Length: 359
Image 1: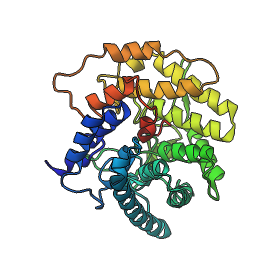
Image 2: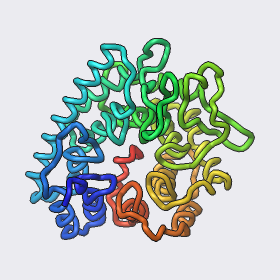
Image 3: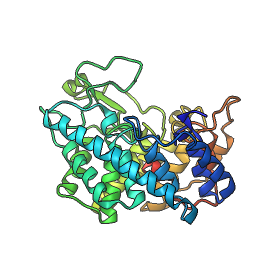
């Protein structure tokens, strides 16, 4: 096999997580053997979704003593990767350069490493990640510290002056969710509350409202800032990764952390309006966690569990059930059948969705 097995996103590491969560230990161990057959990466590309941190996250889904050595190795690798990335990030901030979102995001960056550390219980190193996220929110040259030098699409040149990204997978609502979750855990650092508030105020500034819905632009450019109006004119796909559901969950978590009932009500209303808008729902064209109905269902389940008023999930479950799988649907966690099964499994320990920053 190739090192792709170490991928939580689309490799056998994600399949192992499914089997551990649903209690199929023989299948889980087989998937773990496959995922680690060529070693475990602590190279520059290691992240929550690849290499040692990905395996560390997966292995915390089981308390089986037979996995103790593997957990220890994965935890040590995660610590090495995190320290290296923190050093590079602080050097970048000290030089007052803009980040690439991969420095801080959930999928490839320090927010994702913070998720792994939270699962591992390494609170000392997690607090160092939180210290970095607080620094990330501090303005630099009249722009928010998370303003990216790159663009949102890998295959396209960045817009002049870079962009601000709001998606929970690659944008500032990922750090917001982690800051809120750790605050609620009692794992705090200096400036923690101020960082949460700073991000929330930014989102308030760019909140968009129509007669029937509340939403946030997925990204902003310098031109948008100068105009005071985003180029995006309407809400796009209601996905976990970039759309209103993920952004709303991050804001709900922030509201719960700071006991802000008004923000909580706004976030929950935005989600409810989103899922009741046929125009938005029609934009979902697959069953995946990242872009499709499984992600909407998983996010909705967490929002409903914490909601001020009851939220019906039956329509979302029916939407996901009725979404036809593609003939060539992949097997992975983020884009394939593994994520679909986790979103609907009834025997889960209900903690797997921490990798999506939902819990």
